[in-house]
Length: 249
Image (cartoon, rainbow, N blue to C red):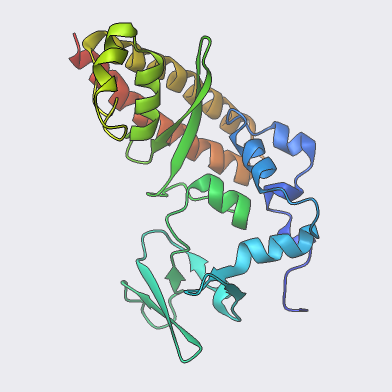
């Protein structure tokens, strides 16, 4: 147990940040929401952080903390597979490393928010990144919309927005479809225009918010990197949304 990190060494994880530092994270409240979702007040916080940052899930749905494995750092571009033979763990990667070069593995297809909360770091070039923006619709509340690193919007998010913004005629036209197919495609030009216009405004505001926060966090590299990467991902999504919106006219 002496090999595990101390509480001070885990201070890069947001669950241990003080309120003033958390206030500097201008991501629409996404970080604080995840901290609350992950919170387990009944558990020892140091032990929980050690497990969260080092646990390996096994084939029988149990998990373990494997000696030496936590010494390998994360690179999402390195394809990684694992198997257990006779109680021994074998890792395979799809990249060759030269003698003396640091060996990386992938911890999984994780967003920057996930790596920040679980491990205390973010990547400015994370091709698996995904950012969430809460889109507000009158009388409907907030809809969490996910934007992926390539700028594409979650299909589930679009389905919800189309359904919420449908008029009675458009709603009737989707009722005869199987639930999995309903609103999976644009239901009308009017509806899609409203969806994309609302997305455009929401993404534009979120991009500005993240950029402003990154500029003001120049003295905190973790927050600056997290917000800079968030603004980049959302800006990519905004460009695609604006392009689709223009195509409607």
